[in-house]
Image 1 (cartoon, rainbow, N blue to C red):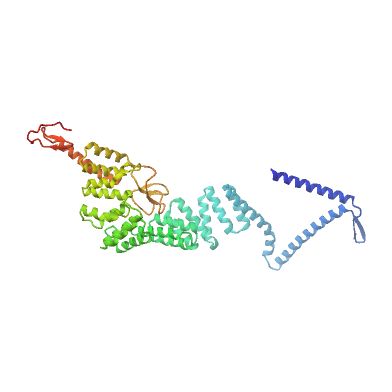
Image 2 (cartoon, rainbow, N blue to C red; image 1 turned 135 degrees about the vertical axis):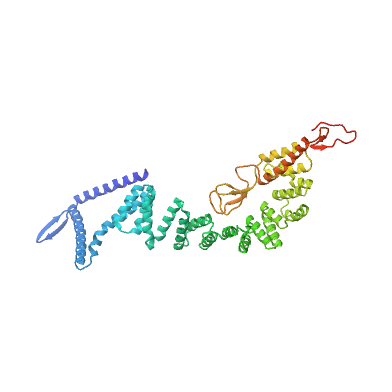
Length: 495
């Protein structure tokens, strides 16, 4: 509003000044005397100004005619482009104006206008390296993928625009779901521009999706060299890729090379739980239990995890439950108050039938607000082992069935829950986004609970069958069948 008012005031001032100037010239005496061919002409002040303007126009026209004359003479002397250059200046101006209009229309989302202006600029400029990209993008905006693909192919044939053409076709293949072709095009685009960050990210995503771990590690190294990735993040992700290469370690045909890759993954990122577990199993397979123990203790010191406990148990598979409790005590001392440590020790003591110690290991976990199903399931097993009634055991089991599942592998990107760790999310295919944490959407029944419930419920059913098959004169006390051959004993009702 103020700017418009200012422009109006400036215009009024200019008109006023011109009026004052014209009035001054009209009142001024004298003028300019010009003699042409013996005839003298006297011009007043205003006439002199007008004559000067006409003279300037004539001089400009003379220069234009002189340029046209020079171009004609050059053309007659054999320079065939002299005339075309003269007349192409106006065409070039119109072409660049059409090019600018096409860019503005493309930015505004006007696909039809952008296409029309780009086609006009293409005809006027004859510079495909400038106009083909606009034509392709305008065609994509209009949904004309066929013309866009044809235009991108034209860009590929030009050395100056080859990268843009390859990248454009790559994006079309990604949109069509043709990941294999898109991956090959991304590799070609990265050869043309090794430091292009977007191409590096696209290629890395496609390689991890296709489980091309060796190629993904090469791309990751390129990201590090180009400065697009911090070194600490590079080491973590390189460890994930090395671990992915060794994923078949536990297969029957697992090779020594795969074992070495698992150990390398743990070396690159000691706090990566799956790498530590797999490296420990690699050392176990090579007959080096001390190395396995060292790796698992170091990882447990960073963060206790059930996978680490399972791998630690595999170091001595044939030991007795009591010996296993003693061996795990070295692990539990690293984080004695951690919930995972207490749950593992409770589980081991239940197997060793030391139920009071298992209860002490659980402690106040059952009273916490975030207690999960595994805590209540273990508590049910402790109560059963100590001879509690069926009602008490079933009460703990009921809590287990309605409790949250506890920490799981959750994708940081889409928050999907995965049954086991993997380098990429099975839902959104994002790389290195699985974190061991409690999910935002709570579920019930953990794998541990699912495995223990049949055992506990089976024990209850066995007790029920025993009661049903008991003789009529037998006494049943706290769920146990009491023989009736005690002298002087009288039958009591079943409870």
